[in-house]
Image (cartoon, rainbow, N blue to C red; front, side, top):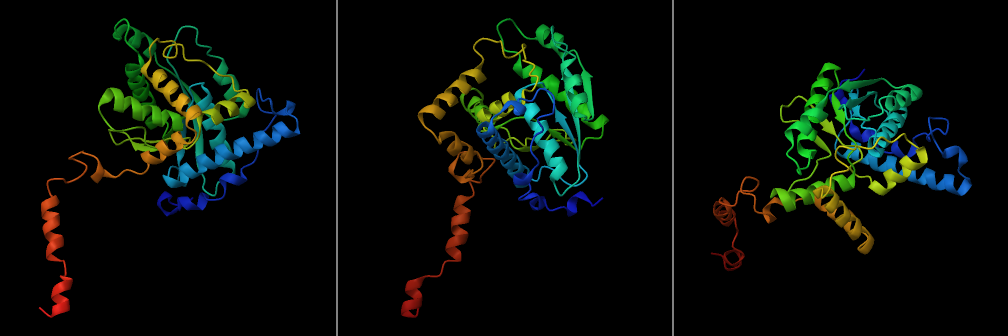
Length: 313
């Protein structure tokens, strides 16, 4: 096996469009019942999703030779789609990497514990169900009327990060898509006083884990349609999804309205996330505003006066 540092991520270029099609024989798939036109549309959809995911993996150097990628599987449409795309990429990519699916069972009342093991056994992938009673902690620590998302996310991250080390995972793959990234951007802008979103690739604060988001370029609508046609056994999150006045839901509705009224606006906004000009913002740590005079002086020193050259002195 080659050393990861010797693998050029650009070797993946072109492979994402040649991935083998999803199998209609896998659990719950509706593909067998599609007519010829619908199947062509499905093929275009999956090709688009895989092209976007492949490009994100290439652009940010997400996966290298020998990586062991831990796919965080929540039971939602995004993580199922992520797992399917990575499974197919694994079969076709010019680099070798392994996948292990991990679900965090947070002990929410009514959680259908049998659903994910049955699905994962059927598709034949290595997996672990990590049991941590974070639900009780979140309910105990969150004041009445407050949203649970921040604490729930923090506890979930801590559990998954630690488990990734235990199983020797070199990357942690999350199912966040384009709209998730834009929603986070506006949540931080409106409520957090900061200009930041979710990066496609991130080193954890303790420096022990690298997180990747291969669906960063993918539209949520495409993922939802793919999940519907694949008929993934979706498990709803009753802990956060049912909360009233959730700020993320308000922002999600705002973006959805823009998508309808102003086609192309979300694409432009996402491009802005990848095209930052620090000198045109106001972050003093990101750009040296106080040193502009010194920079100006250096440029003036190196400036050749065209008039002096013309008149010989």
